[in-house]
Figure 1 (cartoon, one colour):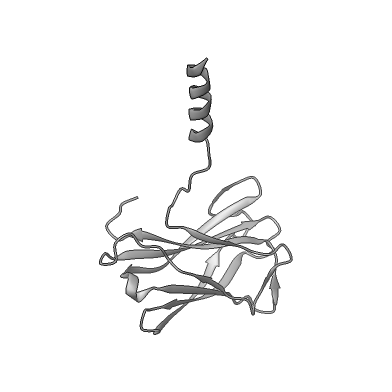
Figure 2: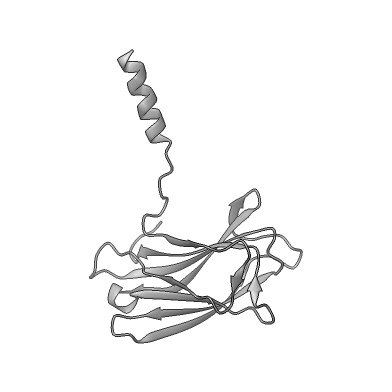
Length: 155
């Protein structure tokens, strides 16, 4: 009986949701939409303060998203408060309306490199703004996240 209980406990704990990327930080957006005047702020996680990292943006959206692209401004803020501003026009679908990126069901994820080979002191905070023209409140984007990947990592 003790062995059966041990097997059940091990099975349940092995199936618990584990983070795929331990450095990923996501912000879940309100169901009533992402307002253009509401930026999202992230504090990236680094394993080694002296190593170089790639900083990557991830966007999760549903079929409710009405556009092919997503326009974003990303501010990478260094420890000395200097700002490195990047603009992105993420392509989320092709001209036929087929979603790109990975996903299952009605949830899709697209990723975009923000900056490569950055040290932690050069990217203390990341602020993401949605800048869709003529769209004050954006619907269909569920989560936005930022994660780091060591520069020498191949996966």
